[in-house]
Length: 179
Image (cartoon, rainbow, N blue to C red):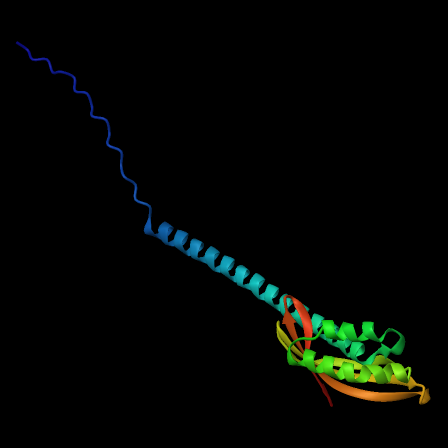
């Protein structure tokens, strides 16, 4: 008897597990790390730019408000004195607000009696210091004053340092020193 060999069916090949080369893995890690560094740098740069913008806006608005407060302090007219004084009172805070109210009340009758007027012209102004919530503004202004005792205008050259604080997002006058 002859043996017939049964045909052998070949076994299907086992899939080979292909290992990614270690170099490819390292490159991927380096690329991901590089992307993260770039994203972090861009984020930090955007944040720093935003902070600088906020600081610049605070300085600009402090100087503008300081100029206006100085003008308001040195400008009055006996015909609408209550309005002139209330502008300063409304923009003042703390101990200064009380001091200003007292001084204004003491001078009010005299200003009306002598029909006094005063106007201010800012000569120069600048920031001595500032941050987002506090500022010191130096102002040089000429104050032109007339009254019934002195109908010819008299010019007083005033130098003052105004202390400003930010309350509820608005600059307020917290102190004034004549220099």
